[in-house]
Image (cartoon, rainbow, N blue to C red; front, side, top):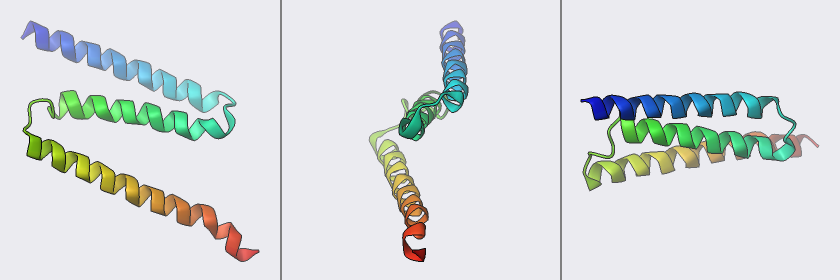
Amino acid sequence: MKGLLIQLGLVWVALLILLAATVIAAHLPLGAAKPWISYAIAFAKAALILWVFMEMRKEGAIARLAMMAAMVWLIMMMTLSASDYLTRGWLSG
């Protein structure tokens, strides 16, 4: 039980550090790299939450495969939505 509490405490501290990194990255003039840095930080936070709090480390291969397939599908939908939004200015001339 004590080991679990230490692990959860470390994950909580890591999430707080990533939160601070998100706030700092939002205020820095990073130019075109800002979204990619934000995506990387968000990916790290999501991976920690999936692995520890949603206990994917204890699940079998099928559950992990289903989770990864859902993530790939979500990334595809977000990419297609972003590409639609980014190319709308091209049509109006």
